[in-house]
Length: 306
Length: 244
Picture 1 (spheres, helix red, strand yellow):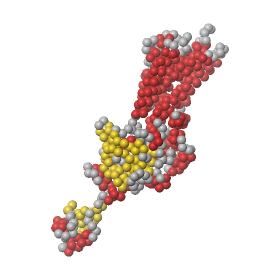
Picture 2 (cartoon, each protein chain N blue to C red):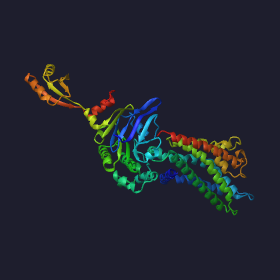
Picture 3 (cartoon, chains in turn yellow, cyan):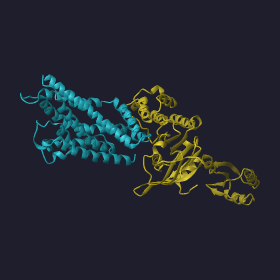
Picture 4 (cartoon, chains in turn cyan, brown):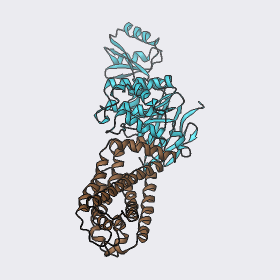
């Protein structure tokens, strides 16, 4: 991959000696949807605030669109749309006026306001003061505001936070359409893997400010190994027999069941046949596949790196 | 420069649907009856006397309080809705945002001064003053009062930027404004106390000649300009480094 839209090297932010973000190397490719994952307080928002120039990194470099953020901040910001944490709005103004206040600073054509309201389907509510909006509507208004300047890069921090399932679905579809329809690269953060797994191409998982996994969703899924478990009448004896088959399978007895991690398909009937021939009763043969969520929990919970 | 104009335009929009205009009219309206009830001696310029009596409440109390209220009000839009993040990720420098808020506050205060000029003329008209209007006197004192407010605006903008609360900067401002009622009587401290400068600058000289009122307007401006530069620089440096 040669063209990174966002590239950070050794990005670090310290608060009173404690690292909120520690030596982070982010790489986000053009046209991708990048899922930025981690539990609450892992440093996602701190990282995003640094990417947007809201706070200064303690160490490390940020390069966006191939330019140093420090040197070309305003040029870079002109090409980014963003939504940081909860949505920002002026409560006493209508949706249209909220966007107009931003449009005046961006100096883009007035017609963009109607266009972005259409994209987030707020056109019918656009004249009401925003303080009466539901959280979902405010969130959509925030996304509308981030799209106002025709950005090439969209940075959305927990855009589905506090939304109901239909709102989450709506926002997800909206984000998915961005690269396809408008050629926009998206960085979307979340503390739920399930939320981004359906839209993201690549994910970065951070824990306690450190990157613990950064690769495609597909490669993450491959970490999800399966295991075959057999519930039999006499597990201990069956295990001895299984080891003796010459199939080369190493199993264990777990909670009264025989468990064989990563067993090849062709070995399953051979093993079953062997057990049956030796008088074992087989009650169940099951496949357990580790879910993405399990891997995610393992990554963010345990100390091991993938 | 372009950035500043765009910020000003956005500030005007945010302000347009609010009640801030009414606040600006309060002081001129309250001052009219004071001007109308002023006893004008046979000798002497009636405009001096009308200005002298109307200025007390306006410049001693209302102007310093407004100087704190307006920046607090302009920052409130961003503090309440989390707007700082949205505003500062736009392609505009923090200096432009800071100057935009400062200039908007200053322009609103200028509007208040113009309304106050109207109030003086109205009081004179009701009093049937036949002497031609002393434009020179009124212009100098109104402009001087406005300039004397600018350090307070700069200081209060800095305070309002750093505190998310709306009331706290106002409380600070009011509690620093009230003592100037006493401080103007002191020829020693009066000239150096920023909250006393608006009334010192706006009071016509013939009217009062005690305490700090003896000083010519030129020497007052040393305090005003000095404190403005200090507060302005401190506020701007702070805001440019602030973590949002």
